[in-house]
Length: 428
Ligand SMILES: CC(=O)N[C@H]1[C@@H](OP(=O)(O)OP(=O)(O)OC[C@H]2O[C@@H](n3ccc(=O)[nH]c3=O)[C@H](O)[C@@H]2O)O[C@H](CO)[C@@H](O)[C@@H]1O
Ligand SMILES: C=C(OP(=O)(O)O)C(=O)O
Image (cartoon, rainbow, N blue to C red; front, top):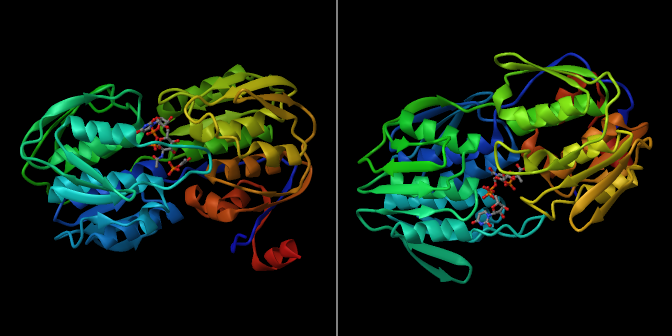
């Protein structure tokens, strides 16, 4: 049972006004890990205050990083020496993304021992590409009881052609090659914004990495990195969640602190459905006050439609009259949002991993539980559109990805509560 008070949303009224998008969780996590490569102080701005960020800070602290928050979203990290090259299961199992400490430790120390990440609520997520890339560039890996011990030779040379686009796999291989001798070439590398932001950060400290944002990335080893100051990009998944929430409530909502170019796949879908999406330089305006039409969505690696907003999109499509289909080839079993949405009145059936959504029946409030981060987001999107009160449990998942969610929903006109009194009532 969640120890956190549930989110209680009285839905059915439109959102309004403007919301500033939080800094990117999935860009900040690898950048914090990448800070392990420098022995000098690094100031990072744009670090969201999320439970996943606290977890990764605990992990780098266990390896020798001293950190201090110096502002709401700013932290100084300093790793004069590594005090350990081992990340135990207890920490890695909390967050899958932590597997990329392996690349960072290989660069900084030449050796690493990292436990395989644990399971995941939405299916098997292998790390075979990380391991194949390491081996292809010369890293020696041995497995013992679910942990991998790795050592890197000097120089590190060669290359790897990824068998699929992997964000974490690309980041891990880049990190391993930043310090020391040798040049490594990665083909079919991920062009995700979170890879590019990590590379921009590393290059700002003196790394020599070319090709970020293309499918060929070349890393030329350097002797050391300097300290520095860097600002992480805005969170395109959080931004997408707000855009979808606006559409689900047929509202007009302005987003600030956003890179519109990172959201084109979603903007295009919303426009196809009949919403207006106006791009500014760092702003987006979604106007979904017209009636919307159904659509089909298939996820893909960036710049395709993100898997991380697929559940929220399913919630939106449940509010749109007509039949839509949603397929997630990136994570075919990312379906934990379906049962609670059905509990709220959505008509969704799953056929061969495709969600067939017969939308337009009025959603109603219910007591539901988030089973993972974006399923939780789908539930608050549905709750905003539903008639009546929805009580959402499993806030520890929503808190992984959404800063101060109750407060921020309130700021755009949502009728939301989250307090201990509500918690006591909900548990009766
Ligand atoms: C912390 C973070 O940034 N997480 C994001 C990151 O996860 P993550 O980096 O783990 O996801 P990947 O890009 O690696 O995964 C993409 C696809 O490749 C597969 N794969 C990946 C690696 C591997 O070794 N073998 C393999 O088969 C995965 O199962 C998946 O089907 O990108 C995902 C895809 O955009 C997002 O859903 C996650 O929110
Ligand atoms: C799935 C996500 O994160 P992770 O890869 O850390 O599980 C996400 O941010 O939607």
